[in-house]
Length: 228
Ligand code: DX5
Ligand code: ZN
Image (cartoon, rainbow, N blue to C red; front, side, top):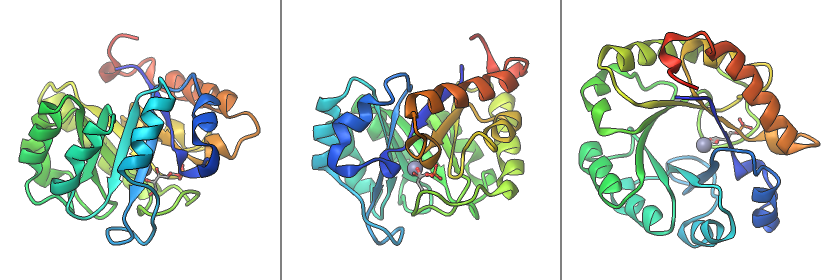
């Protein structure tokens, strides 16, 4: 899979979301952080905003649900227009059933792991997923420092993907910037979420291009990177 850059609108101006989406038109996906003030100590947006945003942009929406009871709510985000829906392993009661339901409704199914959640217990579930998200900060806020201690987990996950011959995207989220993206790519990530590094830049579209170039430089030679 080629490198993908997903700007997180958490760092955008929420009063001008449609416009902010357009400023990063070269991006592969728009990353939409849904927070419920329970699973994480922050509150952002929900189904109606996703519905409006899906109508306002041609860039597909990658919804990251940092919420409790995703089994109950995640399918509504597919109906609202999300093309990829990520639930947290720590919050899902029945991750296999939920992933199947998301896929059956027509979106890509993805599961996220907080920093303290290991990948190993989920090895057998990986074929049920289209993407795995490894959090590189504690979820809840943009602009936090990248956790280098997550690099071994990214490496081990990339090995598991290879071992099972899966077509599974490996996303990283949190503190991804020009100074950390190469380490993530080197460890095996191929989908990169960046909030403050994109929307905090003077030219967000240029920031997306620069991040992509850095990641592609590293992954060009990687055996898992496949055809570009
Ligand atoms: C954090 C969110 C991230 C956030 C990343 O819990 O899941 O998507 O927007 O922001 P940066 O890139 O600034 O760390
Ligand atoms: Zn996120």
